[in-house]
Image 1 (cartoon, rainbow, N blue to C red):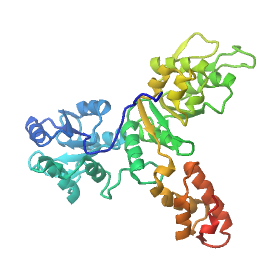
Image 2: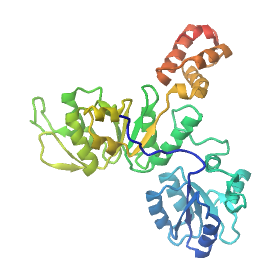
Image 3: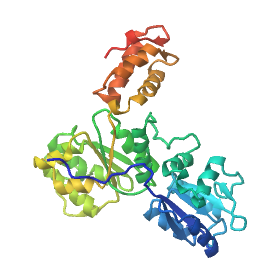
Length: 391
């Protein structure tokens, strides 16, 4: 039986774009509301900085139109708070008297021609002249690309979707399930979610559910009290508790024993952990990111994974594409690895052709190994040839 449909997040012309208007001036808000009445624009209004910050925590906003004359906060202070907590939000300052827009709060720099056209099209007679995709790319920086993820290379369409989903969910506390074949970079997405989130200054605790023997995994996750089992000579907190205030990354969650899955579900639902041998429930504030290369729903049907835990983890799924589905990124990835293993070396046209013909069952990890091997075979030369590419 095939898995039930999970929420789909796509970048296409039908998506709405969240816009937050922040101004105590009801006339200005009405003006902007009239301009932003197309179905694809999801408009929210706030009359103060404090109210706007509440909305940003609750709603997905990509553009913030700011009247600098706020009743409760200096516009520079408010803008700094937004940039720190919600780095993917583009702030555009609105002059309530002239209606002129400038890029960045309290900044004299005019909008680029592209952004001016994008915002002008909201009230244009031809509403379909600029798509949400083009708008997002313009807001990301006028190079036509969505902001990437540190440590990840590639700008093909499948990766653009991954970057956007990651940036979209990172500032929330939503549980994320990252799926994809082995070697696609699931750990990099988990790290990016943590580093972009408001929890970035708190710990990122990683536990590989497949690497720790089942008898020890519970103790690692939940901790234990002194004397609870042989060898427990002192009390110890678990990895979940160690992640308090930060992010817990449960890698290879599909390998978690059934006996522990109910306890993980309880922790996710109640925000509490109980150490082995202890009676006290300890409250923890932890954001969870899980990852797997397994078919979790298939494991559910085999009664090897709890269905309720599956749905609790898959609130916001991000699926990483295999490398064979983004072959357009192979050359850039290879060049990035080559710069690491053999600085100054280049790839010949024959080497690139050989790399792009391969199907890459081992994904990015396999490509890295191939490039490292080639950097050894090239010896003292400075150009990787097709003969150096051993697949």
